Length: 263
Image (cartoon, rainbow, N blue to C red):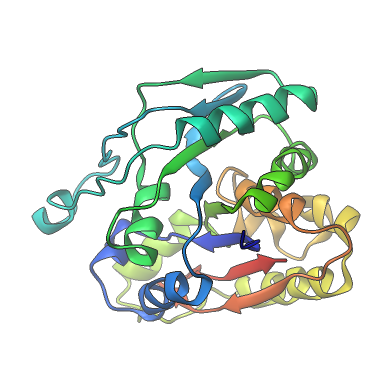
């Protein structure tokens, strides 16, 4: 059975689903590049909860958890089957690792899950399940969560962290209102991207986990943690000692759309 890398992707604005920008094209090409997994398990920034929640829906609905976008976006559906068996196996591994876990058989797929999946696997024929992040917990908590999920990669499961490599929406909206171009970088983005890239290349996990204190402009790029926490889940799900690789970089109105693979 194929062993897939653990991935982090930036899902950005929901408009990525219908806007042919560089991140859209990257995700379109990513599915064929990877091949077909047995199932997809998404750690998504758009499901936040005080404890770990695992979605076990057999037929998850498509949640349009956003507002103010064109009708074409709300018309999209991603009718992939759920992956309840994989989700329950994930929950069992998380409990064995000491996490408090609850299962939710009703929740559908938020746009942090279905939009990357739609672009990567548009036939919607691969079972998919999702796991919440805990915004009150730190990156180390999410790294351990990824470690607990790591063995599922040996069972053909693609572990996908979906968030945003940078997520200062106030600055991004200011750029849009000011008429900035989509590819414009915010002034504090480049040093942060370079720092993260250097620490990933060095395999320096402890320093990455302390990014808010150690990284240049950490708090400016992430005023809150929730959109970066899936990165640490993917980092933890990677093979021990393996060096991560940046597979994509682009900017969408000040938001870095970087993607990383941890093999």
